[in-house]
Amino acid sequence: MILITGATGAVGRLVVQQLVAEGARVRAVSRSPRDAALPYGVEVVQGDPARPGTMADHFKGVEALFLHPRTFGDSADRLLALAAERGVRKVVALSAMNVDDPFELQPSRLRGDRNKEAEEAAVAGGLAWTSLRASAFAGNTLQAWGAQIRAGDVVRYVHAGFRESVLDERDLAEVTARALLTDELAGRRLELTGPESLSHEEMVAVIAAALGRPLRFEEVPPRAVAAHLIGNGLPEPFVRALMARYDHYAGRVQHPPTGEVGKVLGRPARTYGDWVADHVDAFRNG
Ligand SMILES: NC(=O)c1ccc[n+]([C@@H]2O[C@H](COP(=O)([O-])OP(=O)(O)OC[C@H]3O[C@@H](n4cnc5c(N)ncnc54)[C@H](OP(=O)(O)O)[C@@H]3O)[C@@H](O)[C@H]2O)c1
Image (cartoon, rainbow, N blue to C red):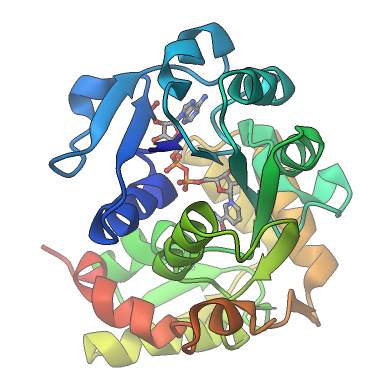
């Protein structure tokens, strides 16, 4: 049995699907199991990893745990101690490529994500472990630009030339399943990126090609984008850290491609174009 925390989220849902496709038995944790809508056959249980007491019964018969860094608050060590006590053998932690950056350059911390703690707890927890240091997800681009592209032909955002090697979340899910179901990746911190580094402007051009209509990237100053994002309800400290990250990495590639996905899966990582082709309807109006 594999226990998945964060199972109803963007990554967890794909991990669950992948495990089911590979024939694994899956127990999925959610704070609201009635809304989970996970595949048939998945055992959905109510729990909150930030309150390890709510998780105690869920480790029964579990071989491997997927530790999602948005779920456990300050409780990673206690959660893993409990898992070890209940006979869990292995933990696979989701983490991030930027975990070693100063915290002020890790905007996600200000949303409560604990990528560093996930990796550290996994390494120190006494179980077999793997840490998956993911680069920026391809899906971030839908969150950042989707509304503008559905509404018009201009994408206003910071740093046209900002380059990163975005990772298709499905590749992340496949690597996660490999780490959970085999011992091939034990004891490793895997740096997972997409296969190519693309600038913001180049990514928008990929979306335009898939939509079959022109899109223009218009670079606007960070201050203007920050005001827009804050006006749309994002917390100011988070937006400040996001802009600091862009400024810090502008002019160089943030996390160049590592080739690790290809090495693990024995096939090339999905490109950003692959991801866009499969999500193009989300950029269409109506
Ligand atoms: N976006 C990127 O580019 C990127 C890159 C590298 C790493 N990461 C890391 O990946 C993680 C995000 O993964 P994701 O996109 O799968 O997240 P997500 O879609 O927000 O899913 C997180 C799931 O965790 C559960 N959860 C439990 N406690 C929570 C809490 N206090 N706040 C929010 N959710 C909570 C929720 O399920 P229930 O409501 O059902 O309990 C939710 O479905 C973050 O830690 C992020 O730092 C992201």
